[in-house]
Image 1 (cartoon, one colour):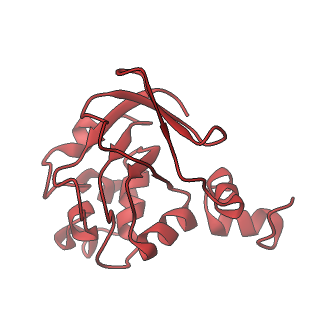
Image 2 (image 1 turned 180 degrees about the vertical axis):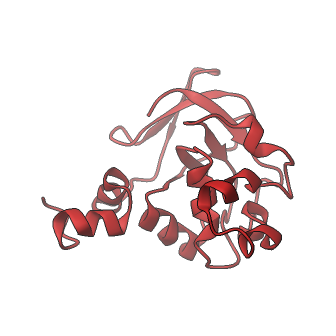
Image 3 (image 1 turned 45 degrees about the horizontal axis):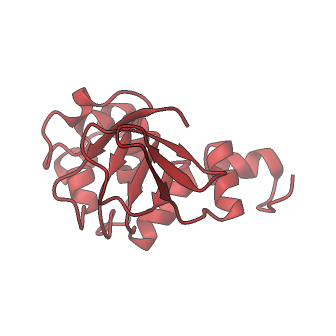
Length: 168
């Protein structure tokens, strides 16, 4: 992926799905592109206006905890975020994100500062912090989930291949 800006969230740990997209929006707005305008609004007002297509969200432990609704990963994806980097993810959020083609990467995010220019190389299993000249090892993404990313999510993958086999 290309070089882009890191947006480090506060709070850093336990960013729940209501922080990602507040209930006051997710139940009233069905258009995901419109909903994306309110991503992280409760913890970082104006976040959507600060982010550019391809930027990265950076957080700590247990990102995406809380509700299992898919509006949270959709709002992130439709905001143009290329990937979320965190120390760990809530299981349901993790699965929902890959199902819609949103890339989540587990790694040590403690050395990434807000505004750092970073890039992600899934093949090399690394995040490169170009601001600091550092390489951060990532947890490998399983093959089928990588295919989901390449095809835009589980449904698009199934439409293309008719099954969930890794080979195609």
